[in-house]
Image (cartoon, rainbow, N blue to C red):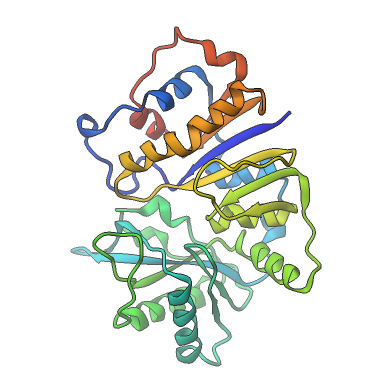
Length: 326
């Protein structure tokens, strides 16, 4: 059985700046899929835990054995009594900017035991002491107060202190994200993902010395999201960057595509997703190239088999509240 799974990352009911429903265009193809598919809730942990389980990644306790975290560039907005994460405040930096930021970090935080490592994705990697400290996914806090999002755990104090010092260092940085208009300045690094990040770092190290092994036939993961790629690395599953549209790939096995939804212009992003990803996947389902098309968003999971495409009697509803009703 070959499954095609599309995961909409970072789209949650309370995250970002959701447009008024009357201003949001209808998306007929997406709405038909949602109406005719079987729907079920995800277990606690959301799509990240679900994906790790589907890929066969080790349990969280086994994955979090070293000191490594994702370091997501963010833009905070000062409120009356707290810092809030800007609705579009998860920033992506160019690789060159990441490299410069990491070099500056090495100078400012020399001899502290912390290293900032550039990647080819939104998140950088922070390597340091093995601490019992974790923070939630920043996508859950877009447009929200960051008060309850600080690292927690028995070893969280050093990580919290580092996070505060990073904010002071970045206050005069003059570094801006590349995907927002107008550009937003980076004024913090959100440190999280201790249960995922070490596996990505280990996989990168193994690839460098030629010892990395992957299961090319079991599945392929296409994602810019480092957490998704970390789960694939931990499970020994082949993983690649996100292409422009549905990948033409003759390799057998299930295919997972993780698409990050930015905080602003959600309607435009979903219209592009329908055209570049959903329609080609439906064509593959019609042609018998895949047997199941699945969609995961927030805390819900939709599954559409080939025969279920003909459930024309199921009334479709507006896609935005349907996706966000989780």
